[in-house]
Image 1 (cartoon, rainbow, N blue to C red):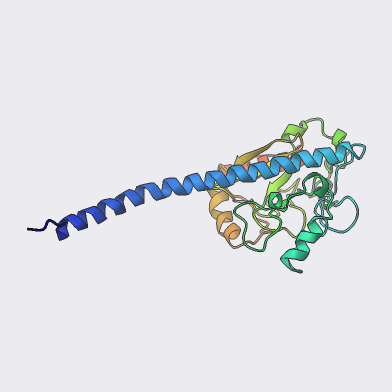
Image 2 (cartoon, rainbow, N blue to C red; image 1 turned 45 degrees about the vertical axis):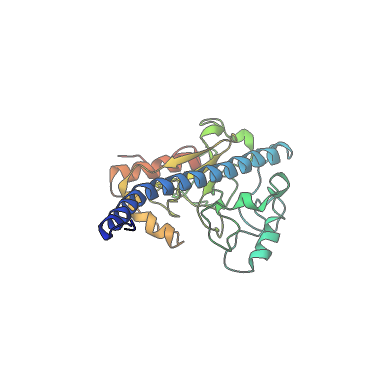
Length: 259
């Protein structure tokens, strides 16, 4: 008599295989995401070091955070996601101030970026970006908040000052965040889980995790659909803390009291 698997035995094997896949797939997904997060941090670290090198070779003056064709603009004119082909945006990126120090197109795009995107990182307004000269935005008497030179960062030190943000999609300009309002301007970036990668003025990069459920649940759907600029005001203490901490990384201090 020929030996063969019975139907019951085949069903048991299939059930065990399905069970193992259900256990292994989340672990594989986490490992893959961890790899993307590490690659993204590496991109930001190299760009942060390039940002410092530019300033060192230009008498301490930092590059401009806004996109555009003027000399010293970080991204050249590649910051626009509304016109031109992928190739023209790449060509524009090569004219940016950071390109001579970071001449690899792959470094400008997070591994989670979509096809056709060339730039998924941005610079906050505070780092020689778009000037928001209103009392409700970033002015605080004689205190230097809008940074144009390396030597303007004292307290907090450069290791605690934000330069590059893993925004997650090609930005149309700088990343805007209020100084004196308890609300978001652009959206809190939700990348690589419940946070995003950041590059700092001393050349290091790291992962910044949002602590509030409110922050993640409000901004994650918007991040997936590639929209920004919500002017969202957190209502929970944890949500306000997320905003406060991010504003301090951007401006060095915050123009409202957390309570």
